[in-house]
Image (cartoon, rainbow, N blue to C red; front, side):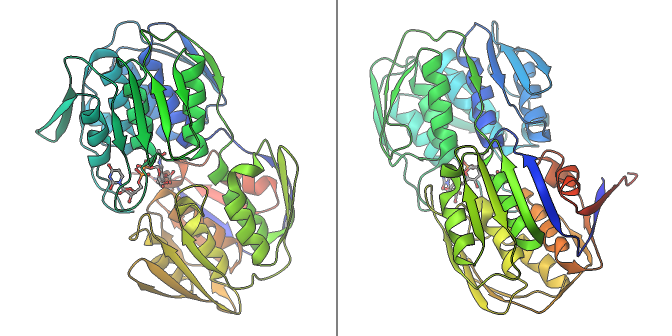
Length: 421
Ligand code: EPZ
């Protein structure tokens, strides 16, 4: 388990390239199960979550080839049960349910456990499958979904916490080969859902409305192979914008889609940072401490929950009081106790963090937990005095390609230390 040592106080300048989106690549790789023909996906990021997904696909019988950022998958003969051993490492594995059900009319995957950001139910996924005529049963920690045939249906996927991203993906992938038309109401509209729909349409599916709350899928007989380029990772981009706000003089991001992170850009501009955008790049100018903000996370196009921790790291050091509320994962504040070890003054109250900015943060040994909380600790280390030691860095490697190299390229001083055991 490596650890990362962040030496605070170094200014960031320069340009980095944003990787392909993890949350787009994962369902798109799973969608390869929907055809016997080979599919080729470009700009697949080199992350442990992606490795897990490729292992799952291989264990289902797929031929998988990877050459740097390009992955080719051929799902000629497949089985329909994903192994617990791998699935337990990544709850997003649940997105193989939809394509397996769509193609083979059955699928068995271990129930995603909870995780540090909160309970991760799949009741909405199952509600969607049910609308297509599938039944399910829970058996020894596995969920098995099955259907004699799949018929188009209407389903509203809104839950207590709003739409579901992977639930929308799963139902869309189960519906593309169903008989008839499926309508998903209250669909998730994230860019990653649109990217998946574009890939499915390139495979011969007939999907309209992706990116809106109503997606209409007209079932087809079969899908064919296709080639696709994954969109840039808007959360990685947002994370480096915050790094630029915290420690930047001038930081430029290349291969980014500014329209995918407008809510983040808006908040950073309200905090006083100048951000310039072109169609595929963004530049942020650091200019000292942020003004305080009121942030509430919402489904896309609102402020993303995946950027909440990073904003807490930015706001922890300033002269005002900010209020950060996560309506999607109200428990997603594992970063708060660690930021407090660095001197932050944050009070938690029912899914809301009251962040009282402090003069200075002090480097300290801190523990990574969920992927975004861990990135937030690295960001906090950039403007803390001394050295911040972030342990259990494997959490960060799940979602960030070479975060230490990319920040060092910009002028940070970050060391990765191999820890035995
Ligand atoms: C996706 O998770 C992302 N992961 C998450 O990013 C992201 O935080 C989340 O969407 C919300 O935007 C991937 O795309 C791989 P949800 P997902 O279903 O689809 C509740 C990261 O850091 N819910 O949109 O699993 C759920 O508990 C990760 O990259 C139900 O109640 O999230 C949550 O409160 C973390 N029933 C809310 O809905 C269900 O059946 C949104 O969850 C499904 C979800």
